[in-house]
Image (tube, rainbow, N blue to C red; front, side, top):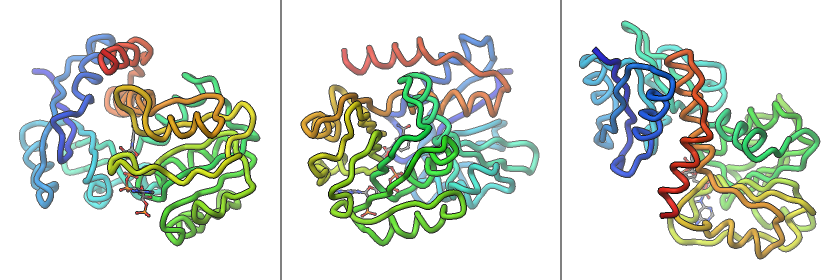
Length: 274
Ligand code: NDP
């Protein structure tokens, strides 16, 4: 019988994870089934226990359950413990192992797929929610020259900077506090686009050759990337590569096999723009 995996979220109908993991399984010859499962907003633990009872081996976790998955795990990877959020679960008897592959996915997309090494770079991270928290340690591990966290609610950015201060000195504040500074990489980890809001990016924020990276993706250029281009970003990338790379890392956690991502990413991109 095929091993069973799924992604939990609410909503979940539009998730691309089943298509991504099915393509990985086919390419690597792994015998597994991967499905999307809608969990009730107040029913995540129940949904997980029902899935485990049905023989589920592992699961991805998306909005709004990543922090609940963190609390549900009986054992955490170091990167999940640091992130305070879990996007990958593996079930083994009574053990629920929690991992977080979002940061590794972002790093692999930026450094491998986009060929943009972070050593010595000045990075601006916009947003102080779960996605932002999950990528700070992996970004710092690349030894950038600096990392500034800017958030609409400045106090959340400051708290996040303090939580990672043992790794490197971080700057943090509101968007206005980026005045007069420029960055080699600006990452949008806010959900502003979901409400159709544009971010108050200040002129001069992009250094020459600067990369604008939006964790969001969609048909055409995202509102953040359109704005970044206007503000002088030399390169723009959306988060579709991060989505595929975090999935590949989760696949590796479960199966011990690292799938190639290039063809799957190109297929998804073609479907998105069709
Ligand atoms: P959270 O809800 O945890 O955090 C949202 C963040 O966005 C907060 O910092 C919030 O600021 C900020 N924000 C929301 N609305 C606005 C606005 N109108 N103007 C300015 N800032 C705003 O979300 P996540 O961190 O989980 O996710 C953030 C984004 O990253 C989402 O769009 C998600 O889809 C994407 N993502 C993509 C992934 C991928 O694989 N490509 C993986 C993970 C996430 P405040 O604190 O002031 O409320």
